[in-house]
Length: 353
Image (cartoon, rainbow, N blue to C red; front, side, top):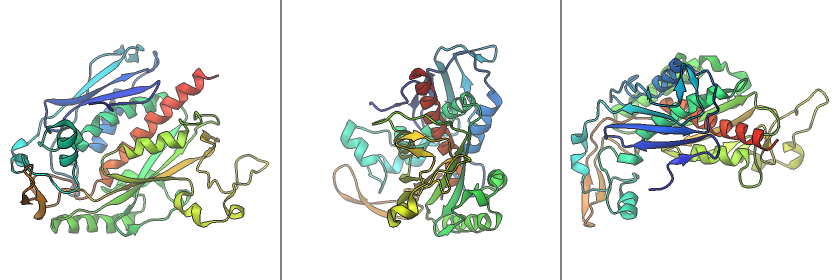
């Protein structure tokens, strides 16, 4: 199975399955001498871990990371950083009923056809459980990015959404509620909608926004490794993601050039930043901002029609512990993937000087 490594200079390779002994990863390319805050790595994992509220999966995992190599006396040595996260609360019997059945909108069918077999216990390698390893990698990458801040937040759940202009929001309030939306009134509505959807045995999608400040001019490697292209790939590699847009995004396609052009100002920067902090695939020193759309979780607590491995029609019954909406737990994952991209481009920019 290829495709388990992300990055060119600062790389993360992840391993493990949802119901295996453990998941984990290897980070390579991290410079030596970096003071590593282990507590902050665990803090980021705690933001992603399951079972943290009534609107997330009730699987109870401590998600305690064990760092195995590449660190000595609190500093990175330049050697590969290996780590593991144990799976301590897997309930594989919850998936016995789908051993020979393809769940609608899951990776069951495609994995079976591509590899000739699949780990049906929680989706195996295709499970979002794998993203915990990305959060560890992102937490380390983040500590390399001095002066850069990465802030993601939930901006929409279903039809409920908040102000598009992040400058009008107090992003420090993002983690003040269980849905991670920096607008208390809208957050309450989102929580109510997710809980209502959960009780109905259904799921719902949403959107995560992200704002990055402090990136200097010059990160990005045209033509195929443009900064926004790598951010797009990073976000689209996350489970359940169906869309990515940066800057003005799709709204920009409805504007005229005279409306959309970012006019430069004498004191620095531009008047509008529709470019989203990136021009020609290279950071221009302004805020980078983007949105990531997540589909409704495919596992619902309702009967669904499908087929088994023999091609026979069957009814799939929803069982197990699943998120009714992924976006609250996706916030630290989006931040982690952004950090991995930026750390890679930071090092690439240094190599190209």
